[in-house]
Image (tube, rainbow, N blue to C red; front, side, top):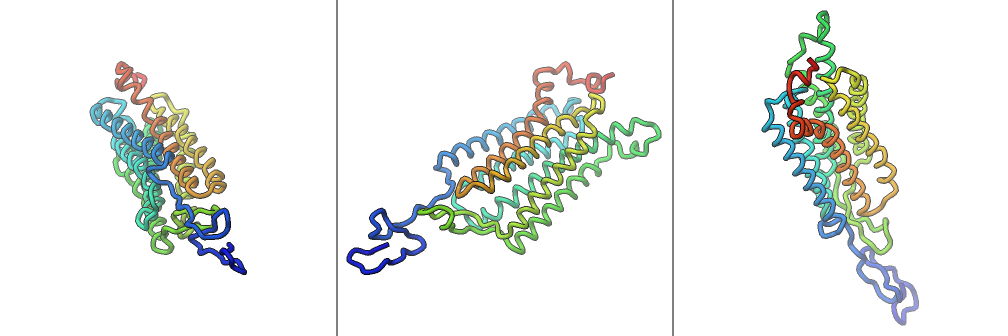
Length: 303
């Protein structure tokens, strides 16, 4: 910039920039996704609505906990999945607001751990489907595992523990932290979270992708089992939605700047969560609430 009557240009400080006349320095606009922003308000409302829907479905399942459709494929895993999805929806709200040290750490790590619990719960459900069907053969050794509670819980605990280790190493080695980005957009200071280690971020997302892929493959192989075990079909479709959303998220995440990066990430979280919620539980809600005549052991087993 050029001061009035000055003989040479003087550079403005990093947090200031020159006005249109180039004769004085003015503060740069501070920008981040706030709750007052239209995008922040809408995303918060959507996350709150989906959280309410998830908890409502959980209440319905608890009320009809002794019905065959709820008891099928381990109702405790269904409760865990619904709780996990509810927390995931709430976690998306942490991305909104002025970045702080704690919020920057919780944004990615909390989402990564909770969502790994959700995906591993679906994986455990799929394994139960396979065991239940294969055990119908009198000579099958899997008959010993039918009704076992430690198998699904072991799958969930082991799969989630790996993600916990990844996130713990991430925080210990190079934890995310808030920063001011003055290079992304001219005339703006973007308040954002520096991921600390991009490699660890990709490890966390990559592990989620690995869990989803394994769950998709197992569910796809089991989707043609008899109708009494057709939850694998819904799991297959839900994983297909999940993988499609996050594959679309990668190029959108790379090509956006500023607060729109956060908007894209929140949208991906909400969309993938909603896909799991509706694909898995809407068919069951339909039977519970609208077709109670189908909610019998005879109808489910086809006998």
